[in-house]
Image (tube, rainbow over all chains, first blue to last red; front, side, top):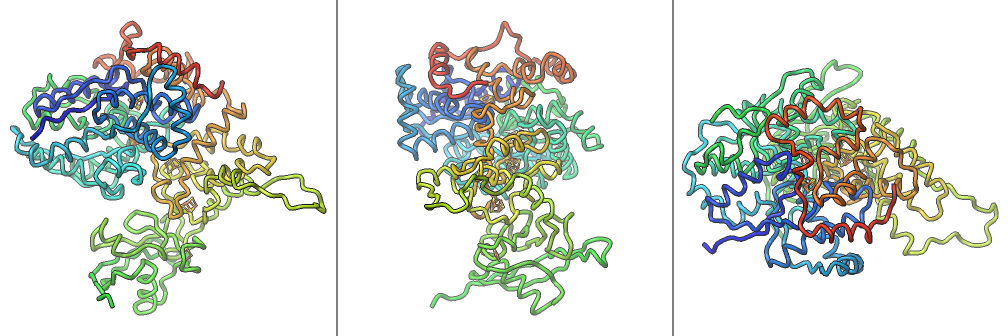
Length: 292
Length: 325
Ligand code: SF4
Ligand code: SF4
Ligand code: SF4
Ligand code: SF4
Ligand code: FES
C-alpha cells in the first residue's frame, strides 16, 4: 500500500483540554505508517458559534485553514467532529458559490493566500476506514479488545446533515450509522447498540442551556450503561469533554448516577495496536480508565 | 412491465386511545410490501384489511399538506412520501410505527399539535406592513429579494423537525426549528416592518435561538429541505446586525471566539468560559476546572499555544469582520 499522508488540522481542543487526543492520534499514525503533517498555522474553526456572530469572518478563517492543506497538496484530516463540520461546510459553500468564493479570496489575497478548493476534508475516522481499510487495520491488531463491550458515541457533527457529510463519510446513514461499530469490531471488541449512539451530547449549549446539555449527556451515558457497555468511544473531543468531565452534572440532571470511562477513537485503536497507556495519554481522563 | 419486488415486514404499531386507555400498547402486523408502496399505503392496508379502528391523519397524499408526519423506527417522515423499501434499507425488516410525539398522542398516530401551533403563532407568522387602503399598484417583491427567504417558505408545518428536536424535548419553552424557520421567513421579507420585534422574541432566553444544541437533526429530517438550522444561524446574525443582542452568557459565548482567535489564533478555552460567564458566574465551573487541572487538561495562560503566522490572522480579523458587539 502506498504510504498515506495527510495534513492534520488538530483544532484547539486537542492542544488544550484533550491533549490525549493529539497524543493518541500521532501514536496510532506512527504504528500504522500514516504520515501526518501538523497544520500549525490553522486557527480555531469557531466551533459553530463564531458564525452565529460573524458568518463572513468565520468563512474567511476556515478557508484560510484549508489553504494551508492545499499548499501542501494534501487532504486535510480533522480529529474533531465540529472542526469537520465547520471546515466541510465552508468548503462546500465556497465550492458551490463562485461569488462568495471570490469575496473570501479577495480577503485572503491581503495575506497572500488563495482558496482553490483543491484539498478534500475528512475526519480521521473515515480516513482510517476508507483509505487505510478496516481489514488492513484488523491485520495489525495485537491486543484484540474481545473482553470489552464498547458503546460507540458518534457525535452529531460527523453524521448530520448527511447531504454535506456524505461527501466524505462514505455514505453513513445518520439514523443508523455503522462506521464506529465497524471499527470496534475491527479492533476485536464487541459493539453495543443503544438508542443514544447517534444523538447529541449537548456540548454546544452547555453554558447557555446547562440543563438541556446535562440531560442529553446523562441520557447518552445511561443508554450505554443499560446496554451493558464497559466503556464508550467517540471520534469527537467535545463529546469526550462532555461525557468524561460532566458526568456529575449529568447525573444530577437525570436523577441517576451515570459514569463510564470514555475513550477517544484513536485511543481505542491504539490499545488494540498494542500502544501503552502512556503513549495514549490515558492518564488525562477525569473518569478514570481503570481497565488497562 | 417491471416485476413487483416484495419483502416481508413486521410492523409494530403504536396504539392508544386517550379516552379509554391508561397506557399505550403496540399491535404487530406482518405484511408483504412491494417496492412501490409508501408508509401510508401500509397504514391504509392495516386499517382496511385488519383493524378499522387504527387512526392516523392523511389528506393530500402528495407531500403538500403535512398532516401525515409520523415516526418510523424513530425517524420522522411524511407517511405519504416515504418508500417502505428505503426504510427497510436503514432499519431492517422490523419497523416501529409511532406518532411524532408519543406523549402527545390522542388516538394512535394522531397527536395534539397545540404546542407547535402556539409557538408558530408566537413568532408573528405574517407580514406586517403599512399598505395604502386602495393601493394604486401591486406591492412587488423582486426575485432577488425573494431569494433572501432561502426557501424558508417551503415549510409545510408537518412538525417533523419540531418533534425531533432534542432541545425542545427537554425544554418545552423552546420555540423549536419550525417556528424559527418561520420567524426567519418573515424577518427576511423586505415588505415586513416587524423584523426587530420578531428578533426580540427569538432572542429571549430559554425560548429563543440560543438554546439550540446544534445537533443538525432539523436539517436532516425536514422533508422539504427547509434547513431550519441555517435559518437559526441567520437569526443569530440578524440579532447582532440589528444591534438587539443582549449582553449575556449566550451572546458573549459567540463573540468570545472572535476575541480568542484574534489573540491566539486558537481558542483560549478557559478564557472563553470566563468571558462568557463573567468573573462570578465562572465560579460554578470550579469543580470541573479543578478535576481537569489535576489531569493536565488545563493550559495555563503563559503556556497558551498560538497559531503560526498570527499576524495574518489579526489582519484578516480586522479586514473581514462584518459586525460589532
Ligand atoms: S471545534 Fe473546537 S476543537 Fe475544533 S477548532 Fe473549533 S474550538 Fe477548536
Ligand atoms: S454530539 Fe454534541 S458536542 Fe458532539 S459533535 Fe454533536 S453537537 Fe457537537
Ligand atoms: S439543530 Fe437546534 S433547532 Fe435543530 S433540531 Fe437540533 S437543537 Fe433543535
Ligand atoms: S421545517 Fe420542514 S420538517 Fe419542519 S415543519 Fe417545516 S416542513 Fe416540516
Ligand atoms: S398526506 Fe399530505 S403530506 Fe402526506
